[in-house]
Length: 115
Length: 114
Image (cartoon, rainbow over all chains, first blue to last red; front, top):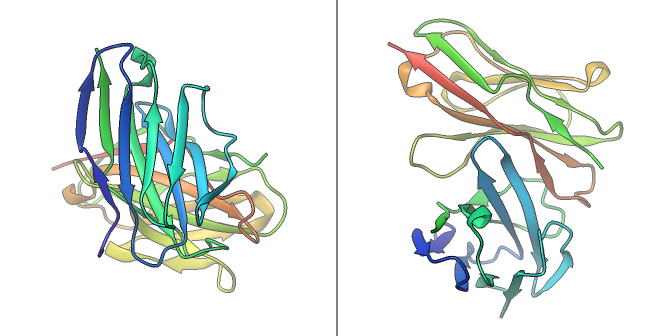
């Protein structure tokens, strides 16, 4: 597609429920990234995919967070047993791989609110 | 690990004032530097980037940034701001080769008063 598409744009969930966030990167972009944006915390790196593999999972905050990417395209970020501190905007970005020097193109994000 | 520091978390200016937002990074090797902007309700957009060559780079909407290697800095400037420049500004760094991905600063919230 023309840009990075994320869905849903907003998600309100009850504490303890699982959520899935979806990212559809720009066609042909082999690298895909998930970031979390919290008020006053800037952008926190979560995970990076090159193709379908994730060489860098260091940013996932806990084992409740997982992500996968299939077909070198769509990625899903799953948060299990959500907690209130998971409330944030989750941003996805993609870039031409593998060296990522051109910078990233970001989606509009999913605003997650855990109540 | 590399880090990016943005010293001003909130900046309030009047229209036509000059702007300089500070950005320092910690990595001593080759770096590629970026400024991203996020307008209210919109997604992050690339404002400008530095890879090599002239350390003064020009971006969109009249913004420019200067890479000073000796100071590990990449400050963003604009001679005369407009109300429409109200946004969140993020400095970001990729180490040469891209091995560590893009590391962002915590952002500067810029408010321009008409």
